[in-house]
Image (tube, rainbow, N blue to C red; front, side, top):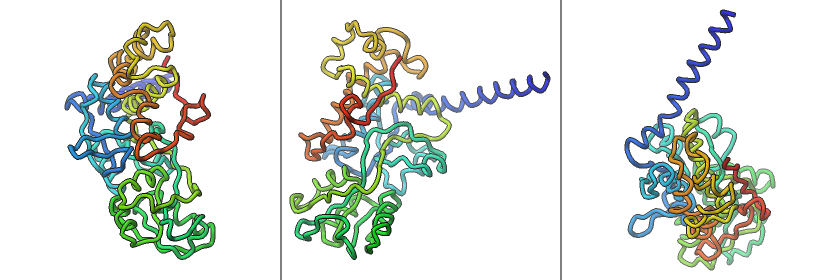
Length: 338
């Protein structure tokens, strides 16, 4: 019995210590008054500044949603642009609080870097872009091609795997920054540009003559993209996770930024819980009870974010595809707020 007692006390102490550690990021964020968000160095539709330095995109909306949930003010965010090479170190060191920077969830990244992926805010896959004048219709016709690629990414690894699996050769032309890759390809320093297909659509808008380029039909990888936090910070991970789930749940329930005030009068118990009219859903997150209401009111539901940033009526013009809600045939499946 004594042995059992010691283990139990030890477990309680370990749990208490863990709880204290897990609360650290939220406490720090509240103390400084903003969320420090690690973003790309400029990827239209995902995280990109305008001429006035205002950031926008699907990834940016994760940070804005978190700020709305924590502070009731989606503007309480500061952005740190990071290259692919810098991004994980910046999060590990505490330079940023969260990394929603079009980053692919892989086993090694999730287990070996002291980091945790929270959920997925965009399902993607890697592709290839070529000039139409090249006359290539399929990626298997690229034998001997020079390929521009960003170093330190899953893109670089997938590229090598694809060419090796198809027994064709290529010449890599590598750069650290995404804009350097795009500029090199646009200047004709390589035959092919490869990255996630969403990135190809986004970066094509920056090229001199966008209509001269073609995205080949092959999708050579799975690229589940989502926000990352430091390992062990469970409460903070929950806040990131449920920020996105709230946006998805709102879309599923037909709640958006325009009708959210009216929806507080809904008789639907799922809507009432989401918007903080019933229950105490914010309590276990360490947030105010209107956390999800503020997200939807100030940032919108997931569908609004998608349409505003990358949808068919934007220059990116991406069909919703697998990023539709599960009930519409997609992969987006929010956990229930209850």
